[in-house]
Image (cartoon, rainbow, N blue to C red):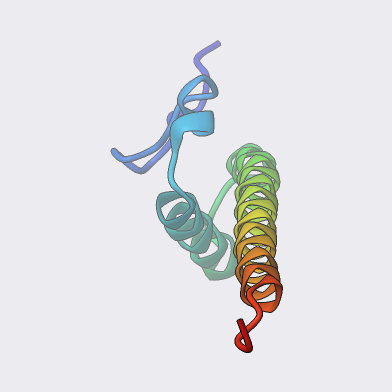
Length: 96
């Protein structure tokens, strides 16, 4: 029995899903939601789209978590550098 073919030429395979950008994954997810809302799909097609959508949601959430972690690290690094510069300024005695 043949597997249902995914409809988008930009579709990522299971292996390629990890390499998909957030924007591409979110666009595909939006397309799939529109298809599901429009109806006209067989139960098997709708189930396959739902399953793919759940994988895309998980992938998008992971990308967002990674971005949030990176931003937090950058803010911490910047904050640490600011504090170090402020301490250096305090160590210099302007009266000398």
